[in-house]
Length: 591
Image 1: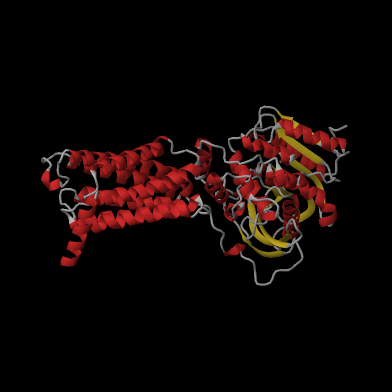
Image 2: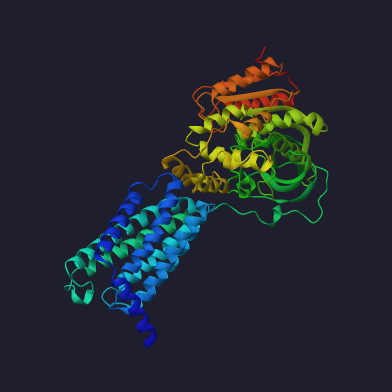
């Protein structure tokens, strides 16, 4: 112990000889950088990373400048905390390829180490400040845990928290320097505090810090994460190469209307490149032994991550925006709803990639027909909304060559994503553009070698895009993704999504294949996502190519409103589908 005490006293004495001018200069610099982080936490994330790295290093320097020659028990704690900050900051500065997600990991680990050191130091330190130091140490550990669990938000929270700490450290260092300049001792024992003095202020601040950090952590946990697929979605040991083969099925009861039976299914399909893939889905039918005509449903966007499969979500048909499940079942129809490959099952989702989406839809119908307990007729009508409208149109165009045995009698596409290059061009200024754009970019980057995420996303915004890809639209944490993209000082995009390789691939996935069956295309007049102007242009082009389309507009209804609530589309959709199943002639508004 004698050697440790002598070493710590020597170290403390060395830092105690730092000139008062240097302490004041360091305090001013630290305070100014901290003030920038507090005032501009949504600075360009690339600049924010550099500032955070400098902040970490200066935080370590501040810890060293605060070592106390009169309290050697505290010196090693200060040195360990300083090392944690300085090493973390240095790693960020000297490792250019380090992503901002890694920065939050480094900062999170550094905070946890510093918090633990602070708590230990409190136990061995002054009795007067023991409670405050322990609370601050605990708050720092909690904030570090938050950094590791919620990186896209934490980078901003950390900027503010570190900024506040740096401002306070800067003020303290300036005060110490001024006292040294006046020849006053820095030892707290030389200037004892009055009873009831500033001790209660420090303790109150520590309590508030702990409460605030704990509240942030609880909020992050309450927002929850994306659902994980269970073993049902795993590939069996032997998988047939033929698409449309039913591999596994089991009864399904979550959010299924009374008087209906349902199953979830796992089946084989084919991806956009013609390679074998797996997909999952749901089959729902009314009670009764008679064969039920099939509505093959292609759901709207639920997310890009594996856990965003509707069959995994609490409300599978609400999540995918199925228009009136009760009404469809009341008509005596069964519903076959694909999740698409890559949702639920392993591998990338073919988001807005027509070949992969359309094949998932058609193979779901093939597989459902193999269910022993289901009573499905061969007659089928395709329905799809938004992303699903795109998928349904592709399924209708692919069917004659890919699944000619299916008895498809019509396709209804509601607010479909059609003119994809133009649609992606609207992502630049759309409030939800970052979210849907991240899905489209991720899918194309995973599917095509010439599409690179880095060509479209600013380096500083990559963490936000990565987190968006991992969240489902039904996750409460999606609000976080939207908020961070809105409040950031700069757009997330380095260039427009309607340019370059992504735009070229999007053009390849516009649903322009000839469709031999009747087509109903429904569009809300107040849709801000798939705008009426984009849809009008697409329909005009299809009509010019000789495609027959029954194009219906619904003024005042937005993207979701057109398929929910009191939308006049719902009874019209059922009536149109009944007519197609009955073999009646369709309306052609192109004529």
